[in-house]
Amino acid sequence: MKRLTNSVFGKLVLMIIIVGMAFFGVDQVVNVLRGGLGASIAQAGSRGFDPADLDRRVEAVLRNMNATSEQPVTKTEALANGLIDQIYASETARITVLGYGAGLGLAPSTEAVLNQTKSIEAFQNPLTGELDPTLLRQRLQQLGFTLNEFEDQIGDDLTIQTMQSAATSAVSAPKALSDVQILYFGEARNVSWFFYDALKGAPPVELTPEDVRAYYDANLEQLKQPERRAIDLLRMSAEDFIGEVEVTEQEIATIYEATKSERFSDPDQRTYAELVFDNRDSARAAFGVLAGGGDPNAVTGAVSNTLKTSRAAEVADETLRDAMFGAGKQSGAMFGPRELNGKWVVARLISVQPGPVKPIEDVADVIRDELARERAQILFSEKMEVLDQALAAGFDLDQIASELKVPIISFIEVDANGVTDRGMQFGLLNEAQAAVAQAFRLDPGELTSRFDTPTAIFVATTRQIVPASTPAFEDIEPGVRNALIAERESSASQAAVTSLVDRITAGTETLEQAAAAGGTAIETLPQPVTRSTAGKAGIPGPIQQAMFSTQLGKVTSLPTGTANLYVILQVNSIEPPSESAMAGIGAELSAAMSNTLAQDLFQALQAEISTSMKLRTNQAALDAYKRSISETQ
Image 1 (cartoon, helix red, strand yellow):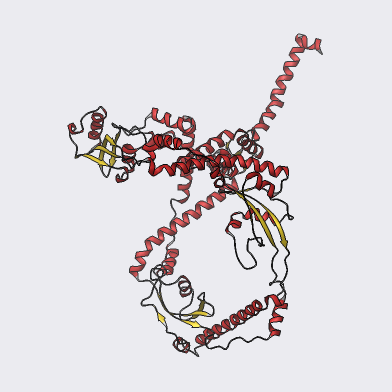
Image 2 (cartoon, rainbow, N blue to C red; image 1 turned 45 degrees about the vertical axis):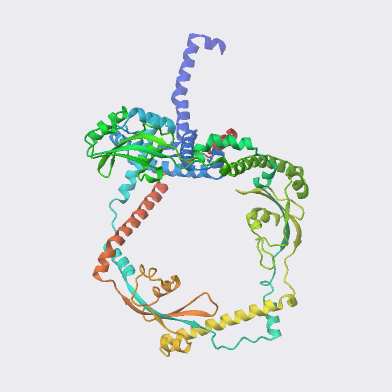
């Protein structure tokens, strides 16, 4: 074989074999690779995304969240709280729609992408208001986008917008449906009602000892008390270690001097010149003069030229406020030209007058508390490691508490919801609900896992178990008697109300007669109300629901929340809306219904897309991306 391959003939044969493999073997391999997902996480039609695309999306979401959040979220935290999975689900839904659009041949033009980019204010030159290529690249670099990636993103957004508008642009609620809604919301009703004490004048319930005992025997399971446990709870938080840290007066003074102007001074006042022009060209010319250090009073052509001194809170326009009072803004800062209320505004910051600074004596306690809490938090983190080591070593709760120097809190017997046999609840057990629930699954003396909440860490153990049991009849006989009385009174009350409603409905007794017999007065609305005006008239919600769900002339009852007291209500009139009322609410209802129909139609489109587009996912690639987050943090 070696001699063959070294000959001219052998090399020729080997070349033929290689070419054949290229045509018949390698091509099939390439097709297989192309038919699969490769390194992609998900794909629908011709659209898909890989881990780099997903990471870029995650970075963008976290950047937007952290821009306004007091406590920035890391990728690790986003993974732990399920945010990564939410972003993944959003991206798969997005590429499904884009894959469907690509299959239809939808693609935005270059001009459409350019026009959309031009409309983004962050990319516009502050002087000309036109798209600034240099500013565009700077902003994209800050966001972590290349120009091509940004253009693709804009194109995708335009494609989705086109599909949404195409599905809903011609939707209009049918007149028949609108008319039904107008009649429903526009009809006016008037009702009368009175309060009825169903057991007024009724003799008290008399029970024999045999009745009470029989009720007890028949309800043994319902009277059974759940298992209760005496719980020992270890709660550890940063506050437990504030007393162990020390803050010196020198440290307080150092922080005060470094931060007093930003944290402990009243808002500063700033003086700026504000010039207003009728047209943009004049404003641009004035901007150039002011930016070059020119005197605002030397500018001509202004409708108004005002020197203003104010605090940030006194400036209503957000963009002007940011330009004059934003972080790092110093004398000479410029604003505009910008159109406000039909005029063009230019402004230049003249001077900054700092606000008075609070003396250190007034803020020393604030600084001391902040420093102590920061150091206690560090100590708390160290104690968490000690706790984990103690749990791994199998220490009991007393040993752990001694090691951490935190107390154990002991509770009397409670059920799994933290309630005692007398109905008492403990707020701390509610806070440690997860630890308590696990303690109920363990034997006495066994420790639960460590449970973390936003404010503390908990470990629990069971000290004693009181098994579930039904109390002896003699121990709860008064409670059983009261329960039986309440049940019989409720039955008698309901029977009396049903009988009264039946008599009024049958015509053997009028509403007025029934009210007089009960010693109460009938109340009637001063004028009919609609579904939209009933609440404004102060009619309670249950009565509103009853009056608009009961037929004309019919009588209904509803409980008031007080034992044995009911509202007996009758619908007196139902008036259809007038022509003027129908015209008044018709346009609003028609628009609302059209919007609802458009939403339903778009949801139907999304369902159709999900059905017709085969979404392929690569769980291994997603898991690898998640592992990369865990390993790098």
